[in-house]
Image 1 (cartoon, rainbow, N blue to C red):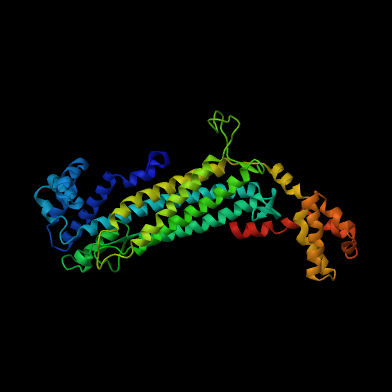
Image 2: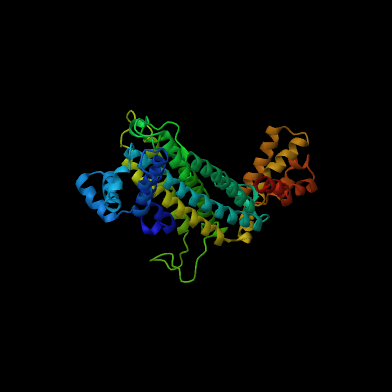
Amino acid sequence: MIPRYSREVMTAIWQPQTKFRIWFEIEAHACDALADLGIIPKESARIIWEKGNFDVDRIDEIEREVKHDVIAFLTSLAEYIGPEARFVHQGMTSSDILDTCFNIQLVRACDILIDDVEKLLVVLKRRAYEHKLDVCIGRSHGIHAEPVTFGLKMAEAYAEFDRNLTRLQNARAEIATCAISGAVGTFANIDPRVEEHVAKSLGLEVEPVSTQIIPRDRHAMFFVTLGVVASSIERLATEIRHLQRTEVLEVEEFFSKGQKGSSAMPHKRNPVLTENLTGLARLVRGMALPAMENVALWHERDISHSSVERMIGPDATVTLDFALTRLTGVMDRLVVYPDNMRANMDKLGGLHNSQRILLALTQAGVSREDSYRLVQRNAMKVWEQGADFAAELKADPEVSARLSDAEIEDKFDLGYHLKHVDTIFNRVFK
């Protein structure tokens, strides 16, 4: 995490103060359950809640000596609680605290990410309807294909991020589990009802089988989901970057007054935000692989996953949160140039209607192979000589023998390509 690509609302989840507070609450809720079961005095549980506190600097100081973060925390906690601290952590192991806390942090982070996507969807829907019928050329392989609208591009992005919203909701549900099962997960020294109480108190589900740790396939799926969301960010960012190229200039990132694009060339207006998003997406995706490699641990547990998660937990969630927020800002203020879209579409003399002519010839009795040959022959004149496609078709005796001038002109009607825009919008926005 670095401040340049962080939002405080997300970084707060990963601060030591937050983490240790969650640790304390896990321990205190467990004491409540132990008291309800008659294992420790109810008064002791009350005192633990009342006096429980910790000092981050003191924990760090203790850890430098004992080389164990949970023991350092428990020692600091005992300094505040006093004699009743002997009831804290009864029958529990470090992973009960670490794993349950980590999942709580991931759930809180996921709630922010879900909110981020919901805000992005609002913007994408608005831009989709705003440009619903603003025609632009669709491209395959980067080459002019057939007309679409910029609104359809936005509807496509909306549908993709709507799927990502569902993925994040599923990831949240999968990661929201609690383990208070003791050493090797057998509950030998702690009643399963303690786990049930802690889980309910913290808004989690009980982990069915925790072999001292919560299985890391859950975490792998969580971070892979973040990687998929990041890929969607990059896909939309890449589209904007291509459309902002000088030779295209169909859209442009908002360029504020006083903003400068280059230290050397004062004329530059670069797509720096979407380029930044492309880079951030690479980082988030890169954290999915170590999460998957964390699944295979030795026997009931080892800590090879620990160092990985201490880094990717904060970094992946903080980075994705920042990227989603930045993307929302980019799309909200994106400058769209419908006139440039139309001018670009017209650069190839109507070639985007080639399929309509092909189909018309086949319907007029010409074989598909011959129809393709006739259309391509005239299309190549447009590519190579800058000719007008409709004029070339009308002048071609083999084409004119099958299609009248009026029939050819009819195939150049732009509205034909837009007749199902409403259908697509109804499917996407329901």
